[in-house]
Structures are given as C-alpha cells and as structure tokens.
Length: 357
Image (cartoon, rainbow, N blue to C red; front, side, top):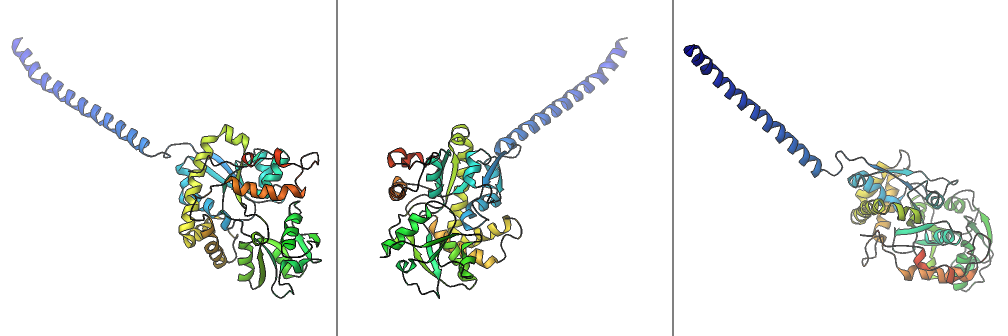
C-alpha cells in the first residue's frame, strides 16, 4: 500500500507541476497578446475606427482652387481625422450654397458675392475659410480688340452669368476708368472664354485661372484687375457651411478643416506635386492638358496666403469692404424683393475663423 502510494506520488507530482507550468505560460501568452492588441489599437487612431461620411460640393469642375481638398484626400489626411470625404460633382441645377443650406452637403465652395445674397435671403450659409487671400478676378477682352482701357467698354457686349451683383461691379470698373458704365448684356450659354474666342461677346469677368488657361490654348487677352478700378479686395472663392452644421457638428468641421488646411499649406509649398495629386485624384478625363493644370497651380499657389496670415483666415475689413461697396447699389435684396440695408447685414454674420488652426 505504502509502496503503491509512493509510486503514485512519484508519478503524479511531476505531472501536476508540468501542467501548472504550461498553464502559467498559456495565461501569460494570452495576456501579452491582449496588451499588444490594446496598444496597437490605441496607437492607430483610424485602424478600427468607423469613418464619418462628409460631403463637399464644388462650385465648378475640379481646378487649382480645389487642390488643397484633393491633396488632403490623396494623402489620407481626412481618414486620419476619421472622415470619409466624398466630393459632389458640380451641377448647374444644384449650386453649392443651396446644397449646403439644405443639408445635402456638409461644406461647399462659394464666394463673397454669393454669401451676401444667401444671407439676405435667409439661406443659412457661413464662410469658414477663404481659399485665396485676395480677389483674383479680372475683366478681360480679346487682345486684338480695340480696347485699351475699361472706359472703352461703354456700349460693348458683356457676357453675364446672370447674377445681380455683376452689373454694379462691371459699371464701377468702367466708371472708375472714366467711362459711363453703360453696356449691353447677354447671359452666357457657354463659358466666358469660349464666348470671347468666338467673338460672341466683347468682355467678360473671369478668374486668373481662366486667363492662364486661355493663353495656354493660344487666346491672348487684355486683362484689367477689378481691384485696380474701385472694386474692393474681397474673398473669392471661399469654403462655406451652414449655421446648423456649425451648431450640430462643430468637432467634425474642425477635423475637416484641420486636414484641409494641411492640404492647402502643402499645395502652397509644393505646387507641382500638388497639381499632380489633383490630376491623379480627380475623376478620370477631367484634365485634357496636364501641363495647363501645373501652370495654373504654379500661378495660384502663392495666392493661398499673403505671407502674413494663416491659410483660410478672414477679416472684417475685407467683408466690410465688399458690403460697403455692394449694398448702396441696391442689388442685394431680401426674399420679398426689398433692398437690404447695411444695418441689417453685419459682416460678423457672414463668416467665422473658429475652424482656422
């Protein structure tokens, strides 16, 4: 009996010890793996994070005004912020301001002129960043036209986009140059540069990017910067959102703008690389001439900032400058057709810098 017990003990004790050792090793391994998994997840903000959908409405087909957004998209900076950005294609039937005001887009690309009209008609739109620090628009004619100054445009044909603020601005430019500010207007059924090329119109109002494109394609233009002829230096284009979006999704907007700021700062410092990212990321077939995109980007990148402000920053001075110019013309009206007075349209209601880092 005692010998059998000693036999059982001599066999059983080592077995129990081995099992205990194995159990401790397995437990340690599981615990180590769990810890490693936790550290990996914590160290990667978006590895298992569900991305929040976010819609951006463009004001035109993709171009260097949008490069910062496409750069941030290509670099994955929106995903790093937990955002799944989708870009809505431009449509003449659904302008960005309307999409933003109705909640069908989170942000859109617009401009000072449109934002003022939006606010006057209770459209619920606010600018949260300017893409360029200065007004880059020009009044242009064909180089072979007998026009040496805006004053020579009296009685000529202007190609209009149909906005109420166009006539006061064109008139001011002509009057400032010594003319009467009287001209004929047709609403364009094509783009302004094509209308100039075909001599359908005598002059148009375009951005610097349009001029670069026209001259790249062989159409030489005479250009007159509107800011040289009595028109204030206001922001255009800008990024807009709705007041409701700011109230409900302030953190989401902050994260979107952080990545967007990265995109525009990169495009400012690396125009050629950013242009290539725009070409690669935009829908296939958007750009028939890659060299034109690069040339346009090189002309615009220095204008994203003026060397003194952060990208996107807006000032009361620029907004008040436009309001003080446009409101006395009577071209800004409310939903009932009543002319809006300056006291009812303060600059502070039109923009915010709260999302500029």
